[in-house]
Every structure is written in structure tokens, then in C-alpha cells.
Image 1 (cartoon, rainbow, N blue to C red):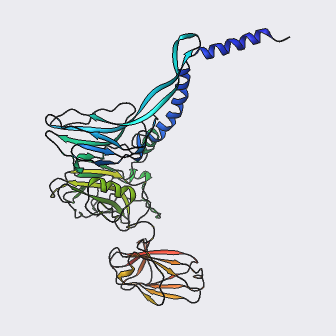
Image 2: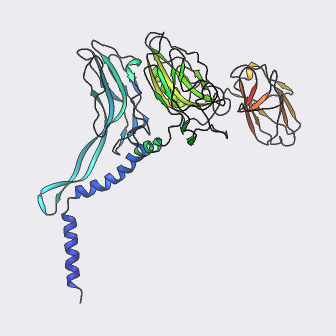
Length: 457
């Protein structure tokens, strides 16, 4: 005979479970999933949401994907058109955000009370919205709601009728890692050479070691020795922050070994990307791209564009530390900067990554003497029948070319590369003879000049 007590117990347990509010159970499961996204990404724009000035005080924001600070995944598939108005007085800061718009659907009745309904599912749509701040002589950005992801800020002033690129502020944009609990906790243990915005025209750099002489230290890609930046006047490690003034080019603070750099000030109303790097002598190098607007500079940084408006140029033979978007109101001074930490997103140590990119050529005769037409070229070489000789041109800064073996016989018939007017070095660390042999089947080699010598990169 079946155990009647057990049947009654199971009925009781099923009844109690279904009597619970289903919305609470569902919410707990969803919160668990969202909690994982929250810890990993925080609030961050993952793709898209680029603004376009649409005339007057109107802005179009492209489609995009963002992870919300509480784990909501925001997806907008169409352009969002926004309209602003000028403040009545003074200045104002506004935020453009993306947020979830939740609507309970498929309502069901609670098993123990047919007069009470709970949501079986919740429909989520995401929307782009504007949060206005309060006008003031020194305005602050307004507070966001719990699930908002900041796309960019907008600077407004009384009587304004047209928006310009300078009015868009990307420094407040939520990027991956900025609000991530996991990545923030990791960052607490990694302050090595961390760049930060010290003022409207000043960049700060943390030292390379957490605590001298121990602790984790910053090291270069493909280098064995850790950095001892910054160094004092005697060449010894100095555990103090370093400051770079982007208007004057002055380097102050802990770094006493680097020489002041020559700044580039964009024309009034424009911006330029400065890349700060640390070379193998543990000294600062700063290089500039081309003038553009803020959006062009941000796009060039994201896509590593080395030509065109707003382009990026990495300092030669240095490890990139920070991209700095320098904006000028008057064309004479840097009036505002955006500092982007690039320690973890650039793994190369030269002026550009990868091979040359100005087309492919297959020479018909050798020995081959390169000239300015080979700048940026990929040179296909076939040594199936015999060894080959190539001569470099007179060293010119940033001249770059790549040699690729397409025959597979380099181990037998080598290519001899002779450096005209200089020697060939590897990563700026090891000097070689003026002639270098390429001897790896199907290998590829990229060479770049600093204006004096040739470097294998």
C-alpha cells in the first residue's frame, strides 16, 4: 500500500511552492545572471552609440550595445534622435545615456489568490535618453539612474543655438572596466605606470613600481628587464608621480631624466591625439597625430588609424602608456584633455603594428635598390632559383617596408639586406652589421628607419 503520509507531504510541498510569488522567483534567477555581467563589465558601452550633430541643438545617436551597471544588456537597433534646449542662464552639463525600459507582460494569477496577478515575463526595450543638469557658473554633471550607461556628455551655455564637436564630452563615457567591480579590484593591485587626468592640461603618470624596491613592476613587451621609470637626476628610481603639461611640454615631478617635449597645439576649436610612451631608457617620448575633431580623434584611437584627421602616431621604440586627446579653444593653449589608458590595449613597441600597408610589389630583377616608392610596401621575394640582394635607401624617419618569402627556399637561398647609411638593429636594443640575412622559409620581416638606422620590428 502506498505511503499516504508521503503523498500528503509532496502535495503540501507543491502547494507551498506554487503559492510563492512567481515574480520573486523569476527575479532571483534573472538577478543571478545579471550579477555576473555586472561584475565582469560594469556599466560599459560595448559597441556603437556614436553621436552625429544633426544641426541646431539636435543630435543623432547611432545604434549600439551596452552592458548596464546592474547587468541589463541594452541593445538599440536604430538611430536615436535627440533634441536639446539651451539653459536659461550660465552653463549646463547634460548626459546622454542608454537605459532599459521594462514592461511586465503575460500576467498570471497567483494560485492562492485569483485577485492578485504577477508577471510571468518582462519585456525589455532599451532607449537613449537625456539627463539635464542644473545651470551654474561652474556646472556639474547630473546624477544617473541605477541602470543608466553614460554614452557621452554635452556642454551647453545660455543662448546657444548650435552644437559643435567641442560641446561633446567623451571623457565621461562608460567604457569596459571603468565601472567593473572585478576589473576595479584587479586595478587596485596594478597602479604601475597608470596615466590619469591631473588637470585641464596636465597628465599624471604613476611610477612603474608599486613600492620600491619590491612589488609588481611594469615591464616592456619583449624585454626582460622591468622599467625603473621615473628616474631622478642621478638615474636612480624615484617613487613619485610625474606630470606632463600638454601646453608647455614641461615634464615635472618624479621624472628628472626625460627632457621636456615639444607640444603640438591644434587650431582653435580642434583637437589632436598625443601618445605618451616610455622608451627602453625609461624616459618619456611623446608623438602627435593629425589635427581633427574630438569624434575623429576617438575613432582613430579605437581603430588605430595612423593617417587622416585625428590620426594616432605612436612614439618610436617605446611602449605606449596613454592616448591624450588635446583640445584647444584658442589655438594657443590646451584647454581640455581626455586621457585614455592604453597600457593593456597596445602590445607593440614601434610606430605601428603589423606589416607595412601601402600595397604589394613583386620585383622582376635583383639586386634591388629601394627608393621612396617602396615606403610602406610589402615586397614579395622568391628565391627558388637563387639568392637575392636588397639595398635599403638613405634612412628617412618612419620609412617602413616588409619583405615576405613566397617561394619557401630562404633557408637555402637567402636574402641579403644591406642597410645603406646605417646599421640594422633589433627592437632598438641590439646592434647588428650593416648586412642582415633573411633565412626562414615563408618568413616575413618588417623594417623601419628612425632617420639614422634601420630597425627590425
